Length: 87
Image (cartoon, rainbow, N blue to C red):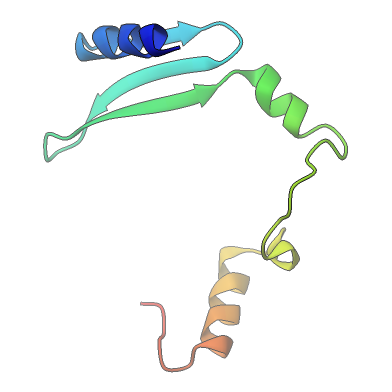
């Protein structure tokens, strides 16, 4: 695995994305400050497997917030933290 990681680093340093079949694509980018970053786009089979039925078995924090809009979450925050509004 470490050799695979090193290969991804070498190709990303050349500005080349790397596709690892079954895992996804690792793409280099640079922001306006010049910081290099690596983006990962997961293979569709991974995300499909996680989103199929009740496949996920871990705990979900704040499950009650699933499906709420940004406005709903802002209103919830404002109600719970009146002295710390979101600006």
